[in-house]
Amino acid sequence: MSDEILVINAGSSSLKFSIFVDADDTPEVSGNIDGIGQHQPARIVLKDAAGARLPTHGKGEVADHGQALLVAIDAMAAHYPDHSVKAVGHRIVHGGADLAEPTVIDAPVLAVLESLVPLVPLHQPHCLNGVRAAQAAFPDAMQVACFDTAFHRTMPEINQLCPIPRRFFDEGVRRYGFHGLSYDYIASALRRDHPALAAGRVVVAHLGNGASLCGMRNGRSVATTMGFSALDGLIMGTRSGHLDPGVLLHLLDRGMDAAELSQMLYHRSGLLGISEISNDMRVLLESDDPRAAQAVEVFAASLTAHIAAMAARLGGIDALIFTAGIGENAAPIRARVCEGLAWLGLDLDAAANDSGQERISTADSPLAALVIPTREDLPILHAVRAQLAARG
Ligand code: AMP
Image (cartoon, rainbow, N blue to C red; front, side, top):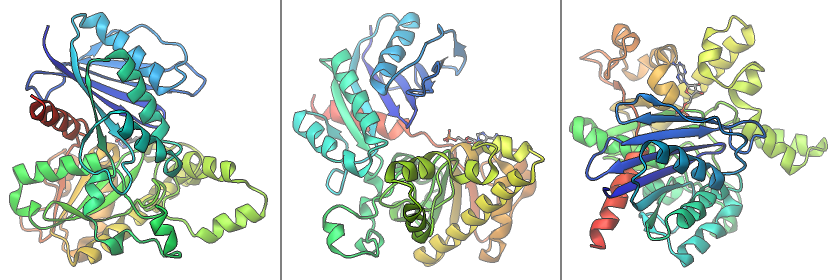
């Protein structure tokens, strides 16, 4: 039996999990449960260290992320019966204005995290269900919280202010930013593999189901497109991104209530809302329907404009990094965006873009464009190891 670290990432209706053994950064086993709380059978995928699928039993409905963790533990135990989980690392969506460093979770910390639920009611409860289930399943294990907001705590205050009466800032209505674990990983990958670029002005485009940009100077967050909530900025799979607040006032006037607006903005807008076909970029890129083409066009135009705005905030741009599902896989989207930024000095290498190279700009392009696969689990794993080492 060896010492293991379990890393958990609770998304809105999914749970990603990985088990790491000793000093290895490749998980011994990893997986994903989808369709949590959707009143339909959940789907579970389990993979071994080489990434090969492992068989799992079908699972019925999985009501919440706590139950999902138990399902994950069962599935892993079927293949790896000798578990000895020494510590669990959790991705926690919100650390508020104060929690920035990875933090060992005890009762007072859990109370602080619960007090932040009103800021992110649709996401934080899932993370905390995961924490409670892990505490119950592994009562002797250290539990460590790593925050999606933490990477952006270096943003200057002017980039945290919302242009509404100042008193709301003190009540917590400020721009926090998210996807921080992904940005943390990309910053460290750049430092390791491209130190000259890492020291400069970099815009990272995290383009998954949720999508945002981070403007970095010398590897630290200066600005980001998500703000108080995970709704702001870029158009996403089912989320609106930036939207004229007058539209919301109009819909409220017409009788929609807050719950209906929330459902619409988080789950029925974005690519799905415009196309009325799918939130999945693969489906839209393959579709002949003009509404799908329009959704792709609006997505690419919004992305291009936000990157240019972020470059202005940074006072110029040395590198553009694409990551996450769309960023890593959707060459046609990358091509549109890079072509739209030619005036900023981006010279796309179309062949490199189409063949999955890391550098997709030409060798002498003044603005470098790279594709770097993200690993949100790694900053969590490394933080847990550091906490274990610090506590002997
Ligand atoms: P993530 O949230 O990072 O897992 O990204 C999920 C999204 O990535 C999916 O909804 C797809 O829209 C997109 N995606 C994944 N693979 C591809 C692909 N080959 N082409 C276009 N989009 C993709």
